[in-house]
Image 1 (cartoon, rainbow, N blue to C red):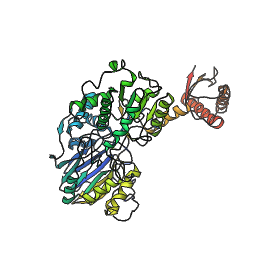
Image 2: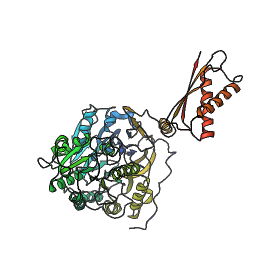
Image 3: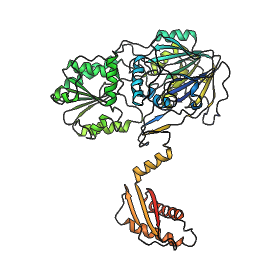
Image 4: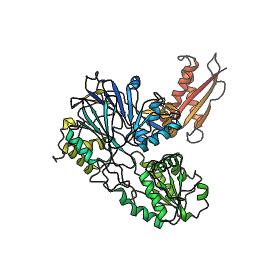
Length: 569
């Protein structure tokens, strides 16, 4: 390996123009999500007038985005060309890779979905909830198919969900390999390892551009095998004095299998809690990806009749989602009441941005007397993403000409780029870019060609893209400062107040009597402006709002949302 060098973006991308028309025979690669963030993964490939999409996921909101359900990739760059889309390749069934598909299919429902058996089952069930019947094409590792002008080959990859696939995309412009999410577990629970011989074969053929998972690029060494978690999980089951509540991703079939196996060994019955958990585990069991011994999983009503020492509950909410089962249990807002002697096992990773929500849950359960077991105090989770040693190994096998790190925050993308350069890849051919930046591949040579819109599209209830950052700012102000409504009844002819000003506040906390001083300040402002200001109702409302806002900011250092209503007599 070469000496370490600091990775940096090839150039500044914020002012890049829109890319020019694609040259004949070239392929354009445009990530619309997944760069600089954990989630919202989506990449568009263009060749010979056709588009291929790889993944279409969601990003989950953070605390500074109140009221937002999920965040989507920006479809605006392809909206006028949806008729040219030949397919959506889904690398695996996690929400950050499939969660945006229903929203894209709202705009064209017959786009073919190309994925493995389990992934297709998960996305089909999700689409049923949106009343969309998809066109699907099932593939497995080793398959090689055509999708329009794209020659697609699928390779097995190990991840924290079964049936993950990498996809090699061949066109006249060159060969691109997209790993999806992957790691190099040599002893996976399902015996399905990442296809390193296949990677080596592609390396011998010549990979012109390598899109590679960056999520754990800043973690040194190699990930431990999933099977190494069994002793720690068994220890939890052996020592728990009462109920065990396990929280995991609703798609983490491997981890759920480990929990089921431990429950069977220790004579406990299992109940699934949460709609997505029940749905996904039912699908996985029906398709043979999850082994559930007869009589192990029982309905909640039957579980309630058992002794606490015989109960295991498996639920959603491992990232502190406020409406998920685990958060509601922590807030004492769920039929399942967690208390003294219960054990809560958080069998999942901590996604960046969710730290505070997860620690609140840990603190709440600890307060109620439960023992909380998590990645920080026991070996009960291992990541599904390749760490630095595994990435270096892949670079040395593949020897790609150019690299586009994907799937990660900036620190992950940059760490991944540094590994690529240490293995000998030319710094100018390592592209650390932002969402929306296009890379053109021409006769095996890659270069940045421009930038398209790739904004965060906010889903708020049933609306998509309507909520704005300005609206979120108002929500944050409402949450932090409260709101005040001022009612002013005035004589139209004279502009004089005919009744004392009334104040209605919600969430605004201040010493008693503030309204009297505020009213005098507003009345003084109205008298001072009587000669120079229009008596137009809108102008008076604006004057009252501004006067009260300045007074509150100066006197009380508060900035609530103020609404003024003027009623003329």
